Amino acid sequence: MDSALIPKGVQRCSLGKFTLLIAVVGAVLLWGVYAMLLCWIKGLNQTNMNDYYGFALWIWADLAVIALGGGAFFTGFLKYIVGKDELKNIINYAVLIGFICYSSALLILAIDIGQPLRGWFIFWHANVHSMLTEVAFCLSCYFAVLTIEYIPLILENRQLNKVPFFHHLAHNMHGIMAVFAATGAFLSFFHQGSLGGVSGVLFGRPFGYREGVFVWPWTFFLFTWSAAAYGPSFTLMCTKILEKASGKQLVKDNVVDLLAKISGWMILTYIIAKIADTLYWALVTAPARGHTLMDFYSNNPVYGIWILVLEIVLGGIIPAIILVVPGTRRNGYLRMTAIILGVIGVSVNRWVMVLQVMAVPVMPFDFWAMYYPSWQEVATTILPVAYGIILIALSYRYLPIFPQEPELNPVD
Amino acid sequence: MFPGFFEWIWDGGHMLFMGGLWYALGIIGLGLTYCIFKAAIETAQGDGEGHGHGDEHH
Image (tube, rainbow over all chains, first blue to last red; front, side, top):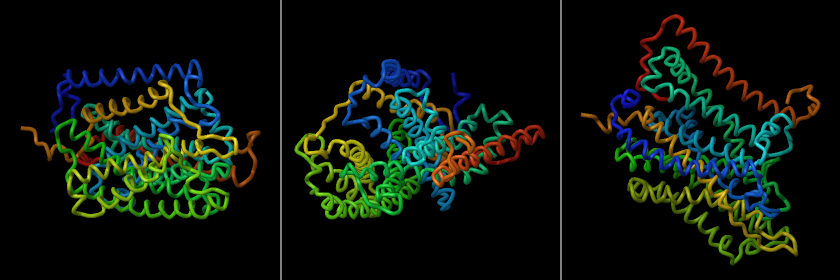
């Protein structure tokens, strides 16, 4: 029924099967929307946030999706600025993933601020001494860039592209995409960094506090670096999931290998810097303020020393080695293991830099504060996942996301 | 916030932050305006064929 909308030279499942998928995921989406409305109508008392946890599950999800969505800016940077032309075969999907991640981050923020109608205050009544103001500025502008990068893809739909104006518009936008990609890379550098800077400047929170250069703590650079390192891995993970779901190869092996290699080297250099930062913090910064490393870890189920091992060894060193060594990188099973470990690693990093920072006792009368999200927080965090699946499904069905798909899967 | 608004102060923080915001928005706005105007002109001129970018995505 919708075959006129499906790109030429590719095959898609029946409309009935597709509608069923959208309906199932749509039910989860509606559950999230219901929780979101509860938060907006009844207020933030619907959450389990408290005086210890002013930042909670939402802000972790925000930071995690922004890091994972870093594949868009870094792949764009490699394609348009560095000139890695092979990446044109995966850049569309990287942009789509980035668009989903950043729109999700903005949606979560719109719930988290409690009064979304006042969201524009941060632009008009800006506190120019706040890292979060810079984050809000760059995040919004970069989302605009991602939208501009996504629009030509929509306009290349078979039917839309027949409209002369849309055809020309898509062509012209492709023509100056390097300008948008460069602007996106600039904006991403600053907002990824400033998200890291937020915990790094908290001198009253010794778990997060770091020294640095000028106004930027080391966490500023580590966050940008980690987003550029792990973001491409997340793009590859989503590509593999879509390949499994569709039962087709969508990107050639040399493109996957190139992006995995770049991601591996970025993770390796990042994890070396992260280990150096952790050692300096544990041996110099924290002791200078009267703390030992073990003051920051506890026997409770969430913040044990195991979380440091999980982040740095399992989520950093091991994926870096697997992705850097050609033999292990070219083994599909090992490559995917490394990619999944990397995605877990960067998510754990954001978890500790948001939640553990606030859980560690800092006053003599303080205790290890625990936090368990309410169902409304969980539902609103799952909401973007459902939204992402629906947008990927629609885009994959109706837009030419993967240029190599017709060649890899010829239709008889 | 623009210069002249009651919260505006002529200091480095305001100039850097707000200047950066308007600079980024300016590039995005100008880029998009250029694409739209060029597309409108090309459409009006009936220049509908021969771009040959059917296999080029981004």
